[in-house]
Length: 232
Ligand SMILES: Cc1cc2nc3c(=O)[nH]c(=O)nc-3n(C[C@H](O)[C@H](O)[C@H](O)COP(=O)(O)O)c2cc1C
Image (cartoon, rainbow, N blue to C red; front, side, top):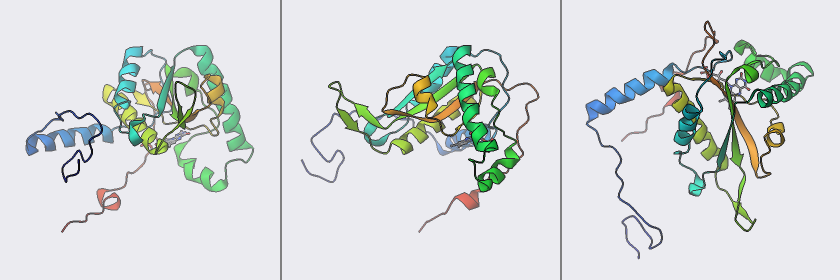
């Protein structure tokens, strides 16, 4: 088969797309409401110990799993850690790496200066206090039922999009999140007993913010700095 109409080939199975279609006024209202919601999102570094039911984390992961991915390979694994002993082990291992970064000169001065305004240090008490730590792993390659490697395409782009949707889903519920990358993160693969094709991508403490939490005062770039309009 060859034509200028999609699908362009005979392969694959196709179903009718039934996505929403709305009047423009309603689209504008929804768009503004979603922007207002997302504009309130902040990275939180002080969590309350108040428990969060697992089903909320499950729904956020299910939502993240709707992300587009290169060749639809869905190259992500989320590990939700809620037990105190494992959270403590993660904290100790992360602090060991971050101590070397902050105190023993592994972090270049340029980087240190850039993050100084965030008020961070090598100490990561939130890794024990937040009720959940969700570690997102990227699957660098897949493994077939015969054990053979399956090449994965655009892994970082795909996992990055899933991470964004995960953050949005949790924020929409009213939960607080930190996007955290203690560097290097290789310790998470062995600590969480993940297979060798998986590499830690981002670690997310998730919970409620401690009452009275503060966040750095930051400005977001205005639209005209981040959007280039090319119209006829
Ligand atoms: C890929 C990535 C890695 C990050 N790593 C860390 C981190 O290791 N520690 C931390 O405190 N914040 C980390 N952050 C959070 C940023 O500092 C934060 O998003 C930024 O300062 C903007 O603040 P906001 O999230 O409150 O808008 C990271 C954010 C991203 C996107």
